[in-house]
Length: 87
Image (cartoon, one colour):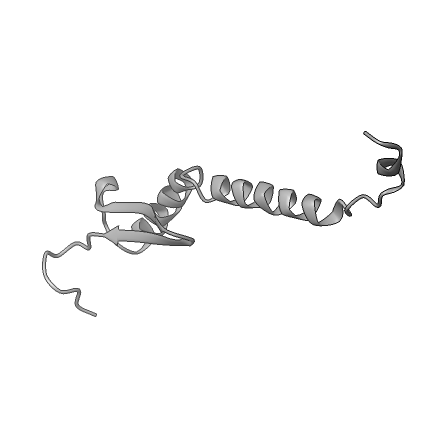
């Protein structure tokens, strides 16, 4: 380290800090979208379905599929009656 290095202007740390924060937030968001909420969502959907029709617990399935930066929530509910749902 020379004497001139002491007087050289240091690059601002704000862009580096912002980039680190963005990376940290992306990792946190990825963790939040994980399967932590799926059991509660499954339970709530099952409760609502049972409010309007007779349905067994294994007739509702919930899953999350991630494609790149897009998350898709897939909910499958097997309705009673076997055929098309009549209104």
